[in-house]
Amino acid sequence: MGQSFDNSKPIFLQIKERIEDQIVNKDLKEDEQIPSTTHIVHFFKVNHLTVAKGINILVDEGIIYKKRGVGMFVAAGAREKLLQKRKETFADSYVTPMLQEAKKLGLTDRELMNIINKIKECDFIET
Image 1 (cartoon, rainbow, N blue to C red):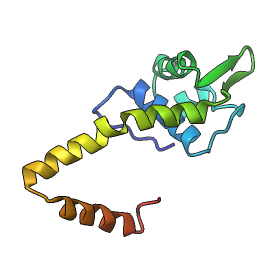
Image 2: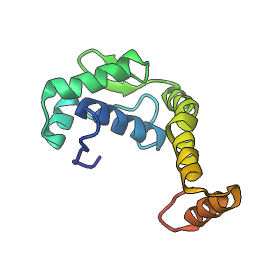
Image 3: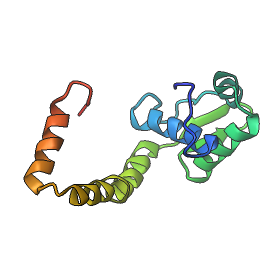
């Protein structure tokens, strides 16, 4: 987890998304304990309520669960649930805006595919 946040969305959502990313990337696995709220508070130097709000959303969504007196753990099927959710929003969040901008720029389908393929071939993109 990096320590910087961007100003485009609330910090609690960014903390939630970073935990989700760790689950999707298999850095956190099913039934594995996530970092404690206190650890996250100290790491990011943010308010305890901010962290709790992000974590509580993950609990409400069934991505993590609480073991009273022990901590928070990744729920069974959490990764699959997150992947499905992200796939459902992928077109609206990424493809549609990209196609709208390509249309504004007058890019042909071939030009757009060339751009995508060129970027995919770069070393900085993991596939």
